[in-house]
Length: 170
Image (tube, rainbow, N blue to C red; front, side, top):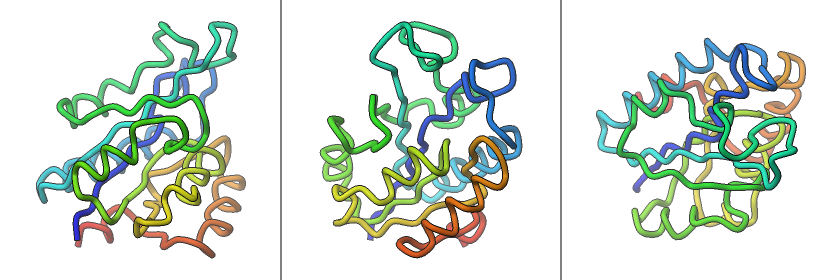
């Protein structure tokens, strides 16, 4: 079984001083950096997913802005990881993600990212994800507040396995 770590939308606009800062981003970042380190140590492919809005008028993730860039610590942790650019909540929709996973011969996905109830959920539950064993790293995800995060995880847990980052690499 080949597993890949998918890092969805850890971009500057979601962090303090960004256009749309989320809840618990610093802890989520720390957990995600540990997951990246463990994945790389095990030789697991790491894939960045970057959301770029279609319009410069977008409230966040506008093209060619500081906010749309992947967080520098995430890039530094996996500088050679491919970047899949998306413009929808589902990281499979109109992207190269599925082709990349097939190229790496991946059959299992660990998902980390932002926002739990949106891009993480839409990607994990995408019909295009059906061929993959999908697991979500709950402590490597966040959203607007703790309540929305917990509600999203409860709903997601009916369909995919939820793990903490440390459990996924044990």
